[in-house]
Length: 480
Image 1 (cartoon, rainbow, N blue to C red):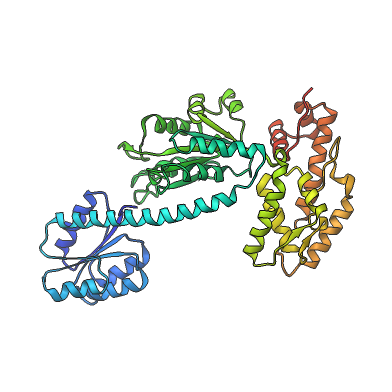
Image 2 (tube, rainbow, N blue to C red; image 1 turned 90 degrees about the horizontal axis):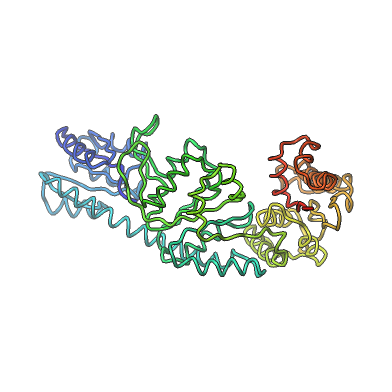
């Protein structure tokens, strides 16, 4: 990341004025200090990328200030300036950790050259660090994307085909199916490896803030914009940006994303400069995009630009042959993270886990395994350690058929009291609700012959709420 904030400390007002004017003209945020004590106070209060310090100041000298900075702010780059061009001063400044040393009077081109050198060095350091992290992530990805089902094999094939190009990818799938992992796999297997992978969840950020998060803003663009901010697209320049839950993006912002795809440039909020960006867009959604386009909730032109190559992630209930592999992986992962002996599941437990519908998909499976590992003191996990799960049977699925509500509550109470020293709160409410909610909706849908309008009326909920519940709970709606 390039330099942004610079501190200038000098007891000469004329020198402070000249440097601040020149640096601000180039777009830097500049703060000024009359002496070492004031400079140290500013450094403690605000983050700076570089400090330019005079070697002779009243009270604390520039070299003394440099010593203090090296103790508490090692990442801050310090340039020492002095009117005495002595070898002793130069050697002393560099020995104490100064980034560079200049003598007065100096041409402003000298400062420009130092800033250019700093930016090049920082970019190289960032790229090396990023490459190490990405290679590490890429190695981890081979472990994290688990599955050998036909559906997952198709996903692997598609990743292999699209990754080498810069083609736009739209990943579709329910919440918890691993869309970001697939997006990372596309990036880390592309020519952009070593460049940034920047992820942003469009549903998690308030609509009024999302634009400035994506495109950044200029100083003074709105109340509270005290300095320029670089947005996600500029951060991802040269690499990939992952727009998760893009279906929740406002229509006016969708038009600006379309412009980025067409023009390859962005404009910061409050700015008028077109900034070119070289970014591959990978989008994801858990919504039915074709329906959103039909209902005018998503731009048709943007949808077709994003949906060049779709990758569909099947819900876990449709690739149950992957569940044993995932269970084994999460058991090893959880036990390693919690520093516990390795756990295993009984055959009956494996069957229970494989038959459950997993409305929350892989995320729910991982959390369920983690909770069982934490609460069970034994090496073998049995069905009793998964009281929230019930194996589905033919016909209308009712959790209460196999285990009464009284039994479920009793099990959860005994579990809570037995583990009070290891758990902060109980979860009886969510457990019982989960046991009742799904079979209730299934029963009403069966009685109304899958008429969702009638079912919603009977249940006393909005039709959109019912549709969301059907998707979340993994309910299969039969069509006549």
